[in-house]
Length: 296
Ligand SMILES: Nc1nc(=O)c2c([nH]1)NC[C@@H]1CN(c3ccc(C(=O)N[C@@H](CCC(=O)O)C(=O)O)cc3)C=[N+]21
Image (cartoon, rainbow, N blue to C red; front, side, top):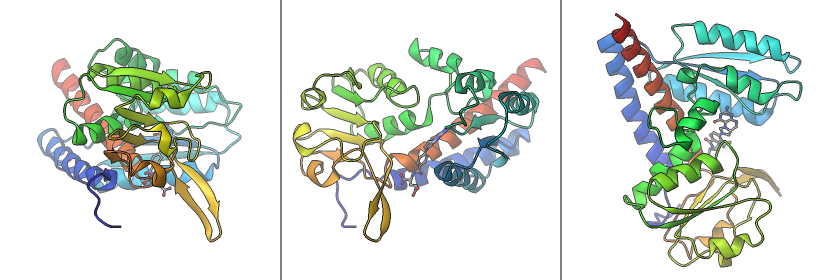
C-alpha cells in the first residue's frame, strides 16, 4: 500500500506495544518469578471465535507470557462453565481470564461474566470493572477495543480535550466504555444507537467518529466533516467474486479523502484489541505480585 499519512497503522502500533509488553513481562518474571498467564475459555465451534482465540494465544506466547486455553463443546451447561471458571479463579498461576463471546444460547452471558474474578477480568466486561470505569475510577480493567481506540486517537491528537466525538453503537463491549473514555479525555460525546433519528446529522458535526455498529459501509462520505478523525471498529466479512474479505463499518473509499486520519480494516483497531489484552494481562500479573507482597 502507498504510504499515506492519514492512514492510522494499528498493526504497526500494536506490534510496538506488544514488543514493550514483552520487555515488561520479562522484567516481571526476572524480578518476581511470576510469568504473566492468560486463560482463554471458548465454548462451541463459532469459526470466527476460533480464529480470534488462536490469535490471542499466539500473541500471548509471542509476548513471552503463558497461555492456557480451554475449549468446551457447544453442549456445555452453564454449571459446567461456572465450575471451570471457579477453578481458574482459584488457580494462583492464572492472572488473566476471559471467556470468548458469543456463548451458546443455553448459557446466560451475564451470569458467566459476573462469575469471573474482577481482578482477573482482562476483558473488562465484569460489572465491577464496568462500574469502576463508569464512575471514573482508575483501578479497573478497561475493555480492550476501546482502550486500543483511545491509543490510536492519542497517536494522532495527544490532547483530545474539547473535541466533539460521536460514537455509533452503544454495546457494553465497545460503544459504552468508548464513550466513557472519550468523556474522561475531555471530549463532548454523543452516542447514537438504533433509535437515533438522524445519525448522519450527528456525525457531520463530529471531530472524532468511532463506529462500532457491525454494519458494512454504514458511514458514507457525506456523513463526515472535512478533517475529522475516523476510527472504524467494524469487522464484517463480505463475499466477493474471489471469495470473501473483511471490511469495516466505514465506506473507506468515500470517507478517507475527507478524513484527517482514518483506521483501515483490517490492520486498524483489530490488532490493537489483542495488544491491549496483553497489556491488561500484564497489569493483572503486576497486581497479583503487588497483592502477594502486601500480604507477606
Ligand atoms: N470475550 C471476548 N473478548 C474479545 O475481545 C472478543 C470476543 N469475546 N469476541 C469476539 C471479539 C472480536 N475480537 C477481535 C479481536 C481481534 C481482531 C483482529 O485482530 N482483527 C484483524 C484481522 C483478523 C482477520 O483477518 O480475521 C484486523 O482487524 O486487522 C478482530 C476482532 C475480539 N473479541
